[in-house]
Image 1 (cartoon, rainbow, N blue to C red):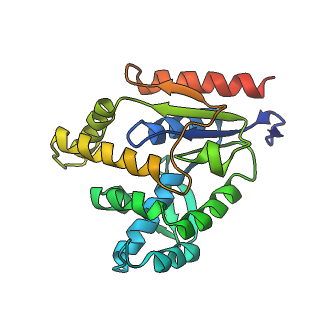
Image 2: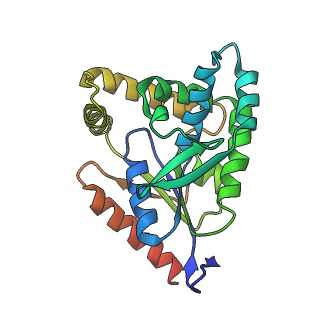
Length: 232
């Protein structure tokens, strides 16, 4: 446990879960409430996938080159209009990395051992100071195994697909729900079965199922868990 500048206790919060479980939105809100730094580890893998696409690299044939590319990137989360954006080498890539093409590529990119090695070091550096909310798929199990608060956030595949469809609709992209469900199921299979840092719930993580909860209700539950830890 560490102390913030005002002398209060702070901790590291690890939030894991499958694609579409609401981790990013909930983690951002939780970090804002607590006054913590927010780190979206998935965005970092998306950024590597985005740069790999720009470079014309193939995930099957150019894995070593993609790993080398990842090692050269500098990541930083900065607020833009009150929202955390990922900057890579000084470029705001937040919008570019949210396309379906980049999202679909980010899972196989994240399975490249060299990519994970370089991003693991970057993520741990970001969490050297307590007072951080980091979310992804292997935060509580691999990146921050000593995190004081660990959450496994999940929902049914149908609910996660509906949320994804709504996100895309708001971005002006129309997608069939059944197609998104199939994509979610394939993403879950890849993330859970990969050889390096597969998606799984840490033994000491608190599981939170969000199907019948609003975003604010989820944040309330998580905030209570964090405050119980830091006030001990």
